[in-house]
Length: 481
Image (cartoon, rainbow, N blue to C red; front, side, top):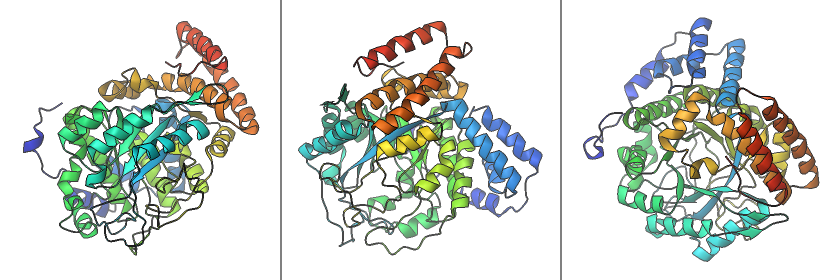
């Protein structure tokens, strides 16, 4: 790790000309080159070099693409096993001082109904999410505005963590709250760190500085490309262990954004020795008050770019969201580690039981509005176990510690064990009869795999698993490795 002084290093580390040059190069990589790059990814040591990522982007041969897809699925299985973590967004405020051309929250949008939830209303939202649906982790989302700054976020985190709701056999509780908010100062980030933030998530939107300047009007906070680019550097400076990056695909050339994301990951590795905890790749969707026509990313290109991101930043969690349709999600879930479900993005929509999409109440249009129960049933049919695990964060498996475990493949053991335990919790407390049957069949298979595997799981781990499992069946909660 380099000695680093944030105040003296506010230079743009995204090499725009290098990225454009890599995209412009029309040379198609050989099969041997592609397979060598895949081999590097499977070693899961660090993010791939930009030149290697550019070569993967240039692959169009159908058979080689299938090899990339299979490799992406293999890397995901190696690092995180076959579990998929679920979460929900909690949108608390759509007030915003920015004027981004693509966003429903933008300042000049006169169609949207503006609202900031009170602490009592946030409690009610969390109560529904934890007690009725069964979520254990949230992403807390606010626009950039003085009314929803660091103090508001910190107070909201404390309120959310205070929620505890009796369920059929146990209780519902939010155990991890990640935050998607505007870039902040180190002092403000320390406030939300003290309140118990999970991952701090800031998307650059586009890494192309020229495009960025056209989409984010001058004289708004978000118009400062470099200040946003260094948001996660400041988070590390403030002591936040886990950070998340993302780009909004459809604003510009998807190839540029993939390379930008990888360069961002490599910069964090270089300076702090820790890459992004998660990577997101939302696609531009219809939004209230926006007439922006972006650069559409086809479903085929979308699948390709997600697989390439999985290979390019192999240790990171990869998040797909309900912006996408169920069909698209099914096509890329083999590469992904997290997805949301039962999602509502209208302000106050969970507690007010708002089931319809109202663009004048939300940031963009959703593609998948299915309930968590249905999503979990589908994942079980596909052979994926749903995990509600948050124990690793509380046990100190964050920051450089989690990175070492992920890169070595050790973390996948904890992923599997905790998925079994937390899935058992959810099935007993929230599942429909049909989904419970599917889930129990899958748990039986997962338990059998663990108990027969003497290489990855020690006798002590197996004994603890069976002990915890029976305690959870008896009503105890939050037992995990």
